[in-house]
Length: 135
Image (cartoon, rainbow, N blue to C red):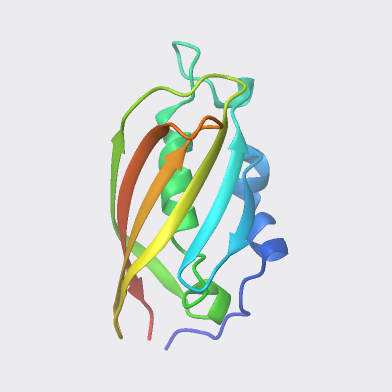
């Protein structure tokens, strides 16, 4: 039996150790969406000097948990599938915003679509996650 968790807030979501390490901030929890932001810096660079794909995958995976019916409602869940499509590179200095939209919430599974855009509104990546709702 899964243990009860405290509902997530902007503060508790932004306090996740990995997010703090990567300077990612949870900015908004909506009824069926959530937003996270990060400014690409030297700590996020790949070998070629742009944003590492792992940063973007982390954004997509993590923001998926924060629409209100999920962690903010105290529902424990875990990723069972993550799909990421990279559209254009992000450079140091770019501000990335990841927006999750809850597409489906069943008793055991949730489906979430995520877009990642830069400060100019250009699509950098998009992805989907499937989350298993723990009993």
